[in-house]
Figure (tube, rainbow, N blue to C red):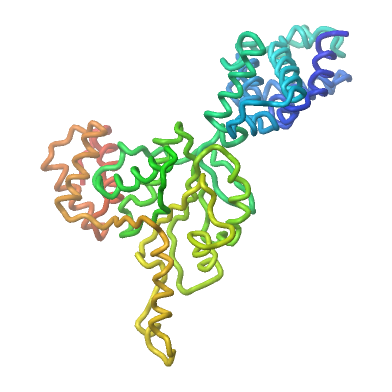
Length: 413
């Protein structure tokens, strides 16, 4: 039996790590190993090499194939991620065998696959070749050590998509990963040190296993409320933090979401952006139950962070306080009760001129923009006036424009 046929049978017999066959590169390799007709083999070769190049692994097949094991969600990885250290003997034996198969398959060379292939003279076709490379560090050395390192990796990083991604969104009743999340870091945010410190300290307490509160970040537009949440994710994801953005229209799905994350070892911020209601609705009631008192309350590994331009979340008019209702005071208290259920409320208000220009100066220094301070401040103020107000967002937009003009040798406007 040639190496190609043997590798195909071994991949077919994967058990615990069978999920890697659904991944693009291992799946394409499996199809190539199975191809028995000349045209099928050549088409499979082309597809496999194409997806290998698309993922940047044309010189590192071993790294690509073994890397899929790091992100596989299976009985072993889920248990290890949850902190378990004792595993059933049959499970460990299956893991050991599967990892050995994955390592063997990852070391296949183009020559191994061309030996005994259905093409009469494959070398005459000058097919593209890939490089074997090296397996991921967790799968180097003795297989028994590999199993321990893999278990440690899952415990530290989680498993499945939660090990591969840091940001997620609730869509179509499922948690879906965000491949390219916002890259904002805390050092990129200038001003608002005190309110931001409150959010950071609450998040750190949460990550360290101490009591922490659901958090409402409210205030004027463009002041960095959402950016603060995104920056904390980028700062603290190595400590196990993940963020799942949940549209307010989907709050009725909250029990479904928490069922999917309650047993995971990572810490989750469930992020609701731009939260407000024009009146009490089903989603309003659902959020109240989630924050406090509902049967499907948030699990211990999750906090809710919401941003809003409104402190009390429900838009209210004077006419709402008129009418013939007997217990009007009770109704008013009811409309205020949702915001009160956030244990931590942090205000972000628009800066005055002095604070705005300080943010501009700090951003310019961060980016190394060599424009004289007076010229920079005058242009920043013109920019704010033209746009109807000062805010950190306005300052950042101005700095983006100023940096581009400075690097292109153009004057500020």
